[in-house]
Length: 304
Ligand SMILES: Nc1nc2c(c(=O)[nH]1)N[C@H]1C(S)=C(S)[C@@H](COP(=O)(O)O)O[C@H]1N2
Ligand SMILES: [Mo]
Image (cartoon, rainbow, N blue to C red; front, side, top):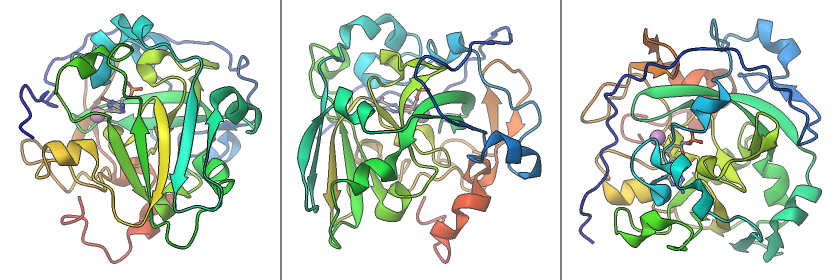
C-alpha cells in the first residue's frame, strides 16, 4: 500500500506554554496507591536514580490539548477539537488468540474487576518532546492473566477502534487502519506496563485514548496505543502501524534510547512540554533499573 500524506513525526515548533501548578486531587477514579515517576511508590522515590530534578506533572491543559492521535487529526491541536466525535460508551474489548479463555468484555465490567491505581509516568514521544502524566488505571498483566494465555502466546497485539464516523481521520488512508501495536509477552507482563483509564483522577479524555489505552513508559509514545478494542495473544511478532508505514524509521521495540538516532534526527535530547531548555533523554526513559534486563544480550541498534 502506498501511503500518501504520511504525517511527518518531526516536531520543530516551540510551544510557549506557561508553567503553572495544577493541584487537582486524584479522587474521582478511586485510586488506591500513588506511584512515582519511577514506577515505585512515591515514598521510595528519593532512593530512585531515575527520578529527575523538577520532574513535576505536566499541566492538565497541556496533556489534553497537545496530542498525537492520527484518527482524530494530524496536528497536535486537532485531537482535542475532534474529541466529541469519539463516542466511547458502550465499549467492549475482545481478547482472543493463543489463550484458554478468549472473550469480549464490556469496559464497565473491566473497570469493576480491577483495583485502580495512580501512576505518574514520563512519556517521551519519538518526535523529541516529553510530558509527565498522572495516570489512573491498572497493570496490563493483571488483566491479561485472566484470559489464560497458552505457551504459544509469545507476543501481544493491540488494535484501536476502526470506525471512520467516530474517528474521522480514518476517512483518509494516512496510516493503515486500525492502528496496531505489539509487545513481547515479557514486556506486556512487566509490572510497569499499564492500562490507563483516567488522568489527573478524571476519566480519560477522548484525545488521550478513551476509554482505555496502553502506557509503556520506557518506550517511545507511539507504542502507547489508544482506544483499544482488541487484544490478541499471538505466536509471531506483530507488525505495528508505524513500522508498516516506515520500517527504516520505526522499529518493533521502540525503546527510548539516546544512543540510537532516528534516521532523520538525534534522540539525545527532549523538550519537556512547558519548558524551554532541552533535557537530556535518558536510556529507557529513565526506567533502565527496572527494564534493562528484558533486553540483555540484544543489539539495541539493530532491534530499535
Ligand atoms: N490509536 C492511536 N494511538 C496512538 C497514536 C495514534 O495516532 N493513534 N499516537 C501515539 C503517539 S505517537 C503518542 S506520542 C502517544 C501520545 O499520547 P497522548 O496524546 O496521550 O500524550 O499516543 C500514541 N498512541
Ligand atoms: Mo509519539
